[in-house]
Structure formats: C-alpha cells, structure tokens
Image (cartoon, rainbow, N blue to C red):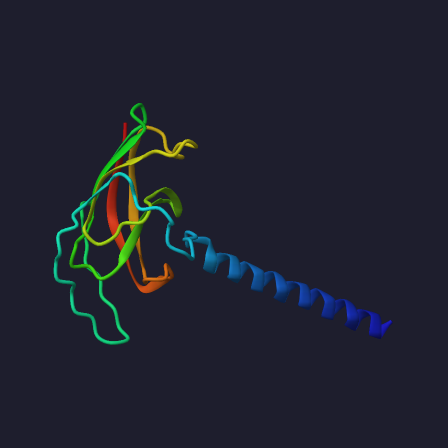
Length: 167
C-alpha cells in the first residue's frame, strides 16, 4: 500500500510539472506572430520602385544595417478593398524587406518583397478580408529584412504606436 501511494504522488507531481512546462512554453510563444522563414517570392506590385543608383549605406563586414521611412497611420477602406499607408525601403538600404501589419498579435496585412528603392502607399485587402470591423485600432508594423538568398536577417524593425482606422 505504501508503494502505491508513492507511485500516485510521483504521477501527480510529474503531471503538474509537465502541465506547468506546457503553460510556460505557450505563454512564451503566444504573443509572437509567425513570420515566414523565407522572403516573399514576388516583388510587391503596388510599390513604386525607384531604380536610380543610390549609394548603399556602409555596413561592417559580418554586420548589417537598415534604412526605412514610414508613417504611423494606416487607413483600411473595406468597401474599396484597400489599405492606405506609407512605407519606404530607401535606395540606400542594403537589403530587401517585407512588412507585416499586426493587430492584437495577428498579422492582418502583409506586403510582398520590397527591394531597396521601394515606396509602398497602398496594399489590397486579401480575398479573405481583414479580421476587423469599422473603428480604430492600435497596431504595429513588423519589418523583416532579407539577405541575397532570401533568408531573414537578424536586423529587423518593430514600429509601435501605429494607428489603424477601418472605414
């Protein structure tokens, strides 16, 4: 009888430890939107690309750098099926980029590839729509930069304090 009680205690303690570990792992990954591990294949067709030669910013050997311009206001017109925004990956930037617009830890819009010299002022709403109703939302823009092979770089940007107005 004494051995059975010990075995039950061990099983209960093991179950509690496993459940606590799963909860910690879930909480760690819960608020991180999943971004693709490869660059988008297509260049963003809604971007205006300035192909004029511009001197790239200097980056140290084995290091990196990024350059970008943006506005923190985005308007989504549900009737027109279009989001209006301002994001530029300037010609001096050494890397391609893609942007991901996030509301409440959900990616609601994303661009295709934005090579250096790209200016993006609109994005079509995907056929599945956006999971938002009319109103105002706090958001962030995640910027993923890519190397020449299309792998994500460690140099990325997270633009906080973005306001989205859905009409």
